[in-house]
Structures are given as C-alpha cells and as structure tokens.
Length: 178
Length: 215
Image 1 (tube, each protein chain N blue to C red):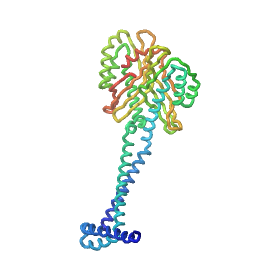
Image 2: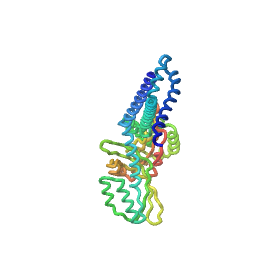
Image 3: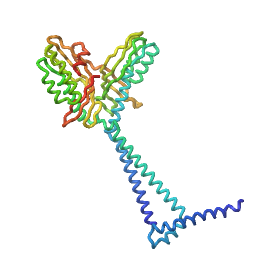
Image 4: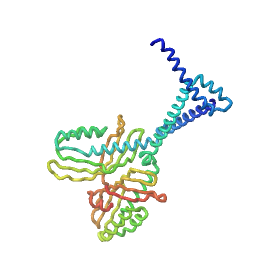
C-alpha cells in the first residue's frame, strides 16, 4: 500500500514537472523576440500587399463606384496619405486593377510600428467606354505604420524613380535583364 | 415505503463495501509483500471508497497534466517551426544584408559591359550564376554577343532597391529593382527600369543566383 502510494505520488510529481517544463518552453517560444519579429514581418508583408492592391485599383465605371473605391483607399491608408486620398474627387473615368506580383519588407521597426516595403505591381487600366485594357508594370515603395487595431496601413506610397536623365525604354531593359 | 428506506440504504451501502473487500483482498495480496497482506486488506476494508476515489483523482490529474504538457510542447514546436519562424529574412540582419549585397553586386556585374567585350561580364556570370539562371544567361549572350560589339553597346546596371522575401538556411528569394543605363554608339544614354525576382543558393559560403524572373 505504501509502495503504491509512493508510486502514485512520484507519478503525479513527474506529470506535474513535465507539464510545468512544457508550459515554460511554450512561454519561452511565445516571448522569443526573434520569433515575434518574424511574425510581425509577415503580418506587415501580408497587410502591405493587400493595401497596395487596393490602392492601385479603382472601379470608376460610375461615380458611385469610384466613390466606393476611394473609400476603400482610405480604409487601407493612414496619416498624410489618407488625408490626401480623402480629398480625391470621385469621378467616372478610366478604371484600373492592380495585382501585387512580388513584395518584400526592406525595413521593420516593431517598437515604433513602422515598416518599409518594396513591391512590383501589375496594373491593368481600362479607359472609360469600350477601350482596350493596357497593362503597366510599376515598382513601388511604401512606408507602413501599425495602427491601433494592430493592422499595418500605408502611410506613404511612391514609385521608385529611374535615376537617369533619359526617358525609360521598357522593352530594352527587360530583354537585357533576362 | 418510508420506514424501509434507511435499512435498504444501509444494506446497499454495506454490500459494495463487502464485495470490494472480497475483490481487492487477493489483489492486494499479490501487490504487497506476503507479510503485511492481511493487515493491509483490513485497512483497505475500512476506507475503500475514499481510497478508490483518491486513486481515480490522482490518475485523472496525472493524465490531464501529461496531456497538457504534450499540448504545450506541441504549441511551442509549432511556434518555432512555422513559416514565419523558418524565414530568417530581416530577423537575421547579418545574413539578410549579406545575401542582398551579394546578389545586388552580382547582378550589377553580369549585366554591365562595354563594346570592347562582354568577357568580364561573362566571367562574373560563371562564378555568380548556376543552374537555370546560368543557362538562360549563356543563351542570351550567345544570341546578342555579335550585335553588342557591332552596335557598340555599353550597358551599366545598378541595383537601386533590394528586398529579401525569403531566407531559409541556404536558399533565398529576393526582389531587386535595377536601373540599367545603355548607350548605343555615340547616341545619348537611356536608362530603363527592370524588376527581378531572384532565387539564390548558398554554396561553399557564397551566394549564387540559380533563377531570375522578370516582374
């Protein structure tokens, strides 16, 4: 009887020890700075990609729809860009649909909640009426800020300019790059 | 009915205890040493329901603790091995800037040449490229080499932005923005933009480009 009780006690103590160690391991992983940083980077990348797709898209087939697109823009932007976009007058006209083909986070500060992102976007522009769509490829750089509700939004957006005095020749560069 | 309750209750209470002792007596005898078998079963007899309950609680608690421990271990393992944990882009600053620098300068070297020859660019390409990228590059140069010298084309390439999308041990995927300035003979120079997704592999402590895709 005593032996059984000692066995049971030892078993319980072992189980408790095992559970405690595992919980501690989990807490360590949870609090690991490197892991948290990686998760934050992926969150910024995912939110940034989604935001850039929205910001390069406008459905301006009617005035109402254009106003809806502008509302979407305001939903994914923050700070100065948001104010700038809010002042945009919604008009019917050419529509555009942007798709982010590739994106990378180039800088991330989790403490201040800011990130930089570069992305290539394929924009399909359809003129008003029955115009044929034209495809354009853009390279963009965006500054993201983490907002209160833990979502990354675009604070500034610009095209990465070609640093040369001449006009870019798209076809030639693509050929030589391959 | 009423008066029978207490007696019946006492009877049912007594019965299982008796059965219990009968069933457990021999078991205890096997478990415990031969000497104290009798005394033990006597003690068991007195507090059998309590002991059983206690034993069940202990077994239940141990099971819950072990299961909980397994759950924590599993969750910790998932945290450490999921996609964002394996990707070392930016989390490993040194490795990130190294692969970005290596790939950026390699692209600049292999896509820069003068009319006097593409030999230097092609030599760089042999050390910096591998696999599919090397085959693509050779095919391209075999096609344009004659024209390049005939038309006296100068090309200089600079990487203006480099971003590491993925970095997992010895493999990396990068997004590179290039500015390419070309000049044909005595014409004015033109600068064009190129965007590439580059896959690189770490071999002998050196990053080599294995695939290039225009974006």
